[in-house]
Length: 366
Picture 1 (cartoon, rainbow, N blue to C red):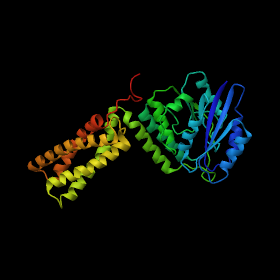
Picture 2: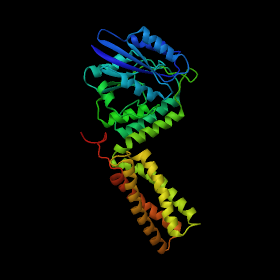
Picture 3: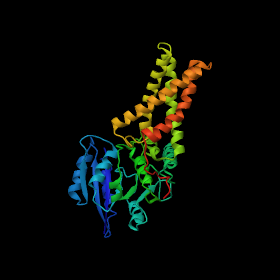
Picture 4: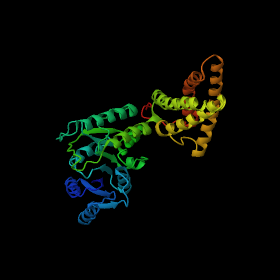
């Protein structure tokens, strides 16, 4: 007999929680034992009381609680830590997904064909409530962006239904506390080159009046998470394309700062000050969108190495700017040309000196 641990994150779900747990319990069988972990994320309604009541009524149910609201991802982290089953699944308390589909999702794992199985709302697997065209477009675009970075051909990256071998979920390093959990975990399983399957599932979405919580802010966070958790392991050409954006923003900051500072400072001082300001912008963007923080160095060591690289690049930038001015270019045009040259030098220095990371990504050959 196998045991399936089902983590149910719940925040203000008093209307559907009891019915959800009763539906989940229906899938227990002589061949499948259930462990249901309700994680109450500091609900302000009766969700916590209902969780405790069901834990006292059903031996399969355990109730866990956060003292302050932290988000769906944080609730899942708590549930994963307490799971003891052979396999671990996620079930939202709002019953948008049919728990009976979990038995189908479990089959590739039981047959040892998969390490992770995802339930897709966009593959045919049962009835679907018709709602929100633009939500479906957004989900498909997020899935496409994720696939570009992970080299997977998923159809529904943002799906709630994910079933894992327990040793797999225990081995993943997860940070996202809200809905960024989905792109983060997909980035993790892609990088580990796990055996991933998709099956179509039923979907009965809710309206906002019925309690749906995800919004535009979560979609923007998903874009950020796709880039943040995948970019350090992407192929070099994708990293360089990304750095053109990061470096471009820093370059614009460099030129604009120089144009303003040149009005009040000597030329050389304006060049150096603008470069340092732009380098600070560049470092922040690199940490958030490009490279893995502390890939080789400690935080202090990374800053020291970065400062050394910036000092060399600044000397090159100053030399190039002054040389181009002597050749007849205006100060701003000379600075822009020197900055363009610096973008390539900056990418190489950051990729191979400041943030070196040689762990293989999903694109690496087996």
